[in-house]
Image 1 (tube, helix red, strand yellow):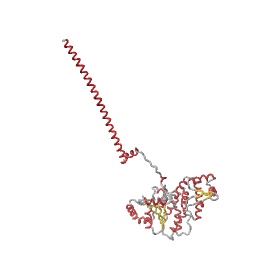
Image 2 (spheres, one colour):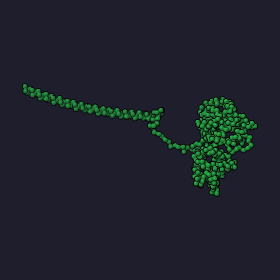
Image 3 (tube, one colour):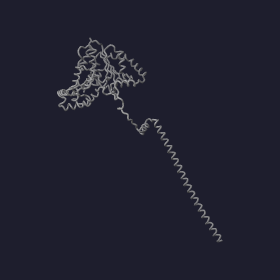
Length: 420
């Protein structure tokens, strides 16, 4: 029995040891399998991540292509524009060819093609239906003021040619840079009216002469039609021009038709001028181009030497003191006297019409504008730097100063100075 028990015990021990070995082997195999499975899963994850990256890159490239072709609007377009890189060009205005004035105008006329020509023609024909009404209002004692988008020059000229045949017509182009009311009225007195006396030098006397003529019962012409294109032009905005026009408009038998384009044109007239003008405002929107009105403006594409400098001179003179403007007036009045004696009305002044330095200094000192040579030299240096006054030495070495402007432009500048 003991031997059987021992044998059974040894047998059981042997079985227990074998089972332990088998379970250990099974645990080792299971661990290897799990490690292999993990490695396989990691490989699969790496492949999947690579595929996802490739898809994302393709989507980004597609988005970039869509970004190049499609343009977003609104807030998305704003942020889209911020994200993109700003591209600048090396092309500048200085690389463009400089054109002659006539060449510039010819190109502008050919390039400015009329859009909606049929609609504009229809609108123009509708305005022409009011010509009889406008003519009646003028003879009723009112004056016409036409406003609206587009040039009204062609419309007014057609109205003048078709209706105003019973009197004298004086047309003033306010958009012209060197136009003056005084010069226009002087030409009216000399060329049209049968006035034997020479036109007065003062503006008030000239306006009074024309007003008295058309109030006289023995006059040769029944009426005067005063046409002012752009009464709000830069050369007609001064107090003297507006006052002269208002006095003429208030005269019987003188009828005024004017056009405006500036949004603040109504600020030109106070209560007295408004009552004299007695305006009737009419909307005359034509959608015509402003080629004629803007043809006298400075352009970066055109040679500046061919353009008048009246506007730039006025800007500089406004920034000076009264003594500085007086120094300019002394030279301008002397130059106008020389141009009047030589009969030079259209050409620009040269050194032959200028003023030598010693005479210039004596005239300024007698007018109490300067007290010493240094003050005059400093003012002349500023004028020369701005190319308002030119200096040139004569044959005997004397320094001569002159203003390179024509007669009408210089008169306009002097009127502007007198109003300041």
